[in-house]
Amino acid sequence: MSEQRNKKKYSLRFGNKDLPSFLVTKVNIRKLIFFTTVYSLVFINIFRPFNSESWIPGINNYNYFLYSSLMVLVGLALISISRIIMYFFVKKISIGYLEYLIWIFIEILLLAGFYVFIAYKVGFIDNYLLQNPDMKLWECILEILRKAVANTTWMLLIPYIISFLYLYNEHLIRDVINKTEPEKEKNVIQFKDEKKETRLTITSDKILYIESSDNYCSIKYLNNDKIQDFLLRNSLRNIADELIDTSLQRCHRSYIINFEHVSSLKKDNGEISLEFDIPNVKNLPVSKTYIDRIMDSFVIYSKQK
Image: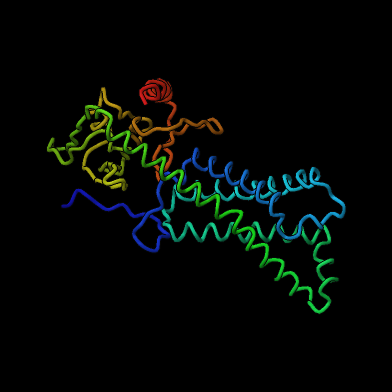
C-alpha cells in the first residue's frame, strides 16, 4: 500500500508556471499600492488625461491638485480592495502569469469605469455631446470609456511593471544573500509508522504542519517550493512524542505546527490561529489546551528569525 498521496489543489492556471509568491506578500502589496499611488498622482497632474482640467471651469493648479488627489485616493481604495481580495484568493487557489494579467485588466476596466462615472457626474459627458452633436449618448460613453481605458492602462501598467522589476530584483538579491550566508545546521527528522519503521526522512525546515486524518497523519512539506502531502499510518500523539525539543509542536488535537514557518498569530472573536509565511497554506487553529505553550513558542521562534 502506498504511503504517499498527491495533494489535490484548486487551480486556475493555464500552464505550469505559478505566480511568484513575492508578488502577493503583504509587504510587497503595500509597496505596489504606494508606488502606484504616487505615480498616478504625478501622471494626472502632468498629463491631465480625459481633459480633466475642463471639468471644473476656471480651476487653478492648486485646486486641480486637490481634486486629482481625491480621485487618486478613491482609485487607490479600489486597487487596495482588489489586492486584498487577491491576497486571500491565492491562499486557496493558485494562479499563474496569465491569470495575473487578466486580474490587472479587470482592475483597469473597473478604474476606467469609475472615471467615466465621475465624468458623467461632473457634466463632462454633456459637454462632450454638445461639442459632438452627431454622436449618440452611448457612442459618447463608449468613446470616453475607450480613452479612459487607454489612460488608465498607462497609469497602472507602468508602475506595475516598474514595481515587478524592483520586487523581482529585490527577490534575487535576497536569494543571493541567503545562498552566500553560512548555512545553518539543519535538523533532520525521521517519521516512523506505527510499526516503528521509518517512512520519511526530511529536514525540519521543509515541514509545514502535520494533520490527523483518521488512523493516518498527513505530513505537509515543501519540495522544490511546492507543497507536498505524505500520508503516514500513525497517531498524532505518537508523532508529537517523537518531536519533543524540535520546532514542531502540537497546537490542536488535529494539528502539529512547525514554528519555522509561522509568520503571525491572530486572535479573532476569541479564537487564536497561526498564519504561515508560505502562500496557499491555510491558517491553523490553536485550541485552549495549548494556548500558553504556543504563545511562548511563538515569541521564542520569532526572535530567532
